[in-house]
Length: 574
Image 1 (cartoon, helix red, strand yellow):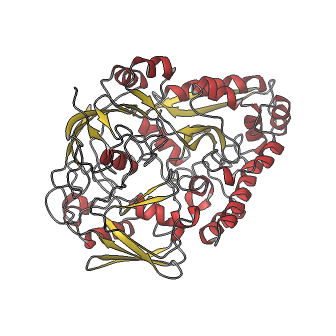
Image 2: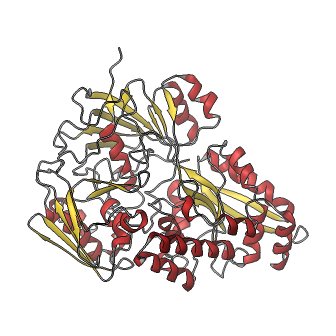
């Protein structure tokens, strides 16, 4: 299993408030490389070192449960995982694993006005699209304005929830204006949006139907170009890439895997070098097979049971049913059996620890009692909803075909709930079918996660909980509130976070949101979602590690994947 940003969307958080990393209003960079200078994980060389070797073909093993659709539309949530980072780049890269450290990309710098309602980016000189045409400020403005013209493209609700009112270009600068303080959305609009070429998207099918256009031969500014078949995507180094000498790795092979088994075999044998999925018994199956095999999978989000809260779902919309499920699930057992101990148990507030420890309210979690299974409380709460072993409740839980760890985790959950009279049937669906049902609320229960981690718990919690992110059943809740939770008090807390003046205020607001998670159980976090990552150092160096976490390490994380690709280098066999 891997978390798929391409399949789920969320409003994300600005680095400035969440990490107190942006105290000044002007940020510039004279670096022509746009990359951070950090020691690599192999050999201690620095990024851009002339001794790095170019060449090599690297294979990615990241099972998707389907063949490749060969669509690279960066606006389309079903496909943009394959395009963002590899082909389309953001303005600024923000690393949530390094206290929101910024790397200028297509923007060489930016400046906020005094009240953070307007930001002006300076677009980098000398950048070319992969077809040789220059990238300009007009391309950047066009990227954002197209979201306004075609609202289906505005996956992050920048023109609605974020209050974006205009995007204009003048010379080498692009100015964005908002209705209110917009610093909290910086991570979203600066890091998660890939810039597109106006000269391609303003003509033909792209102009007529930008939301459904497949973009089969994408023209980007990123380090790679691509040729695709349903069974494999082959990325080649972009000869016109603006960072001199990069990328170091010449070719990427990205096969389509239908389940974890073949992908894991390729990783264990060394046929694939970059893995981004769950491996059962990873020590014996993978790590012990070669001294060149390594893993580092930092937890960044939650994997949760998602109940449908719409009143038409009479069981899961009842608090007693959700309480019973939460009290009955043995999260430690799910972690140990379902996730092979590689994902720690989650807590009901949804705050990831130790990543976001300062936001964690351990006392409140202990008082609520959801940290350990309690079948007595579970049975009592279920009885308030009218269910018991003599009057059982039958529910279907949707999941994604081929996610073997989810299958194992759901099997544990089924065992935990059965004694109460809650009978779970797992419905294992193709990737696209699963997300179609998730978006539209066509489920009793779903097993899944949000895609967008940010510099604080706000990113994930806002995606899950803010009522602006949901939609009526049958319509797409593409911004993350798939359970259809609506609570004005929580909306208010999340809105206050966006304009909070200090970190202490932010911490207090997140703890109050956590209290509503404990009280209302809109979702039920089960494990902390690891950023699955396996890597082989025989022929490639420069990987991110716990000692050098320069990016989220999984291939499915965008645009972090680009940062990994810009650090990797080829080591020919001796």
